[in-house]
Length: 133
Image (cartoon, rainbow, N blue to C red):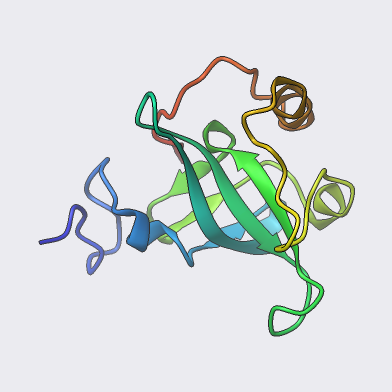
């Protein structure tokens, strides 16, 4: 049983499985593809989604850069079954990122403050569903 109807032209539920989201493309301004969601990072104490790990660049997994983007920075584009961010490729080239073998400590308060400042999302914890378009 799935949590969302994905065969229609729009997503019809506020509940989506992680498997439905992982692998989704993310687009920015001007319908420019920014990357793909690789992972969802959960706060196990609160049960909330804090970040989506987005991959960008590279070829066949080589040279790709990963970004932990605060969950509330995403906008759900249900008509196109994808997520959007308010930015473009140039913004991601300068974003704080990491590679697949060197993940940051996402529980570190200084790291968290830096990421939220970059994306303009604030540091209060929330895993609210991304805003619909």
